[in-house]
Length: 290
Image (tube, rainbow, N blue to C red; front, side, top):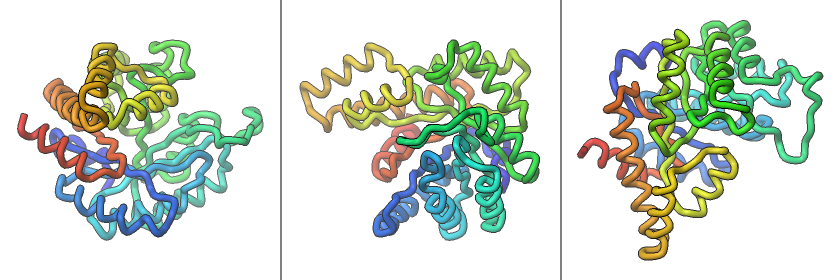
C-alpha cells in the first residue's frame, strides 16, 4: 500500500514510529510491543535507520516482518549522508523485493568519528535523495521530514520552510514533522506551506515526555524548544512526585497535544512510540476519552 493514497481516505489517523533493537536477542520483546500496538489500527509504522546506515539491515528486516507478519504497512527511514548511490540502490531494491512501497527520505546525521568532503558526496541533502529515489524507483512513495521550529542548522524558519518546499517539489508526497511541544509551531508551518501552494499532507510528530533527563537530552540534540511554563511544571512535578509524576504529566500532555492537533485539522498524528506499548495505549485511550 502506498501510504499517501490512503491518507485522505482514512480521516484522522494514528501512525507509529519504532526503532529497531540492534541486538537480535531483544527482537522477541520488541515484536511483543508491535503486537500490542497493532490493536490501535495504525495507518502505517515507520522504522528508523541509524546514522550512515548503521542499522540498515535491522531496519529492513524489522519493517518487512511488521508488514508481513502483523499486517501494518511500513515506511523504513533512509538516511543518505555519507552514502553511495550503489548502497542506496541496493537498499531500495531490497525494499521493493520485500513489497515495501514507502520510504522516509532523510539527510541524517554524520556518523560519529567520521568526516566527509561535501564536494565528493553523492548526497548532500534529503532533496538529493528524494530526486534519486523518484528517478530510480518511481513507484515508491517518498515522505520527508519537516521541522516546525526550524532545523537547528537553518538560519531562519523562513529558510527552513523553503528547504522543505524544495523537498516536496522534488517529488515527496507527504511530510512527517519532527517533535515539537507547542502546537502553534505546527499550525504556523502548515499555514506557511499552504500559502506557498503546497497541498501535501503534513503529519505532526508527537514525542511523549518520559523524564526531565530525556527532555533535556532531546532539546540539546534536536534543537527543539519547550514552552517555559511546561518546563517549570515538569520541574515542579519532579520535586513533588519524582519520576513517576513527570511521566504522568508527559502522558497527559501528549494526549492533550494530540487532541488539539486533530481538532485543529491535522490529517493524523505520528506517535514516537519509544518502543513502549503501555505508554502509547494509555495516551491513545485518553485521546479517545476526550
